[in-house]
Image 1 (cartoon, rainbow, N blue to C red):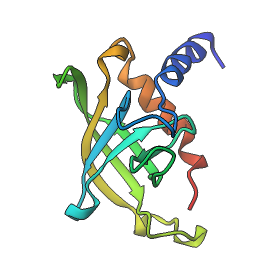
Image 2: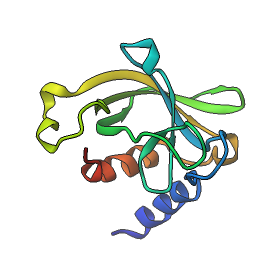
Image 3: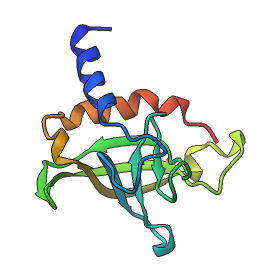
Length: 138
């Protein structure tokens, strides 16, 4: 691994949320999903998963299958937001045999980076998530 990759990954790792952190999130996303009941904020946590925040230490991980930042950042609520495109296996699929493209859902959304980490390159976050996608299993 190149030194620059280690440095940028270290920058992303320094912004990850611990499961026991409160509702605040350093790196989070929201998706425009098909069903209103499923709309939620997801935090990027120390295990490399985007997890829906419920209570400290709890939350469903999103099994991402494709993750792309598709737009430039805009400052919103003091945080920088980037448009994203995400393909994922919905949580109701919990068997390895269900992990097929026919079951994937696609959604547009926003990736937000807390102002404390405004020096993070969003492409580094994108690479961080893409590198871990193969570890996301039902």
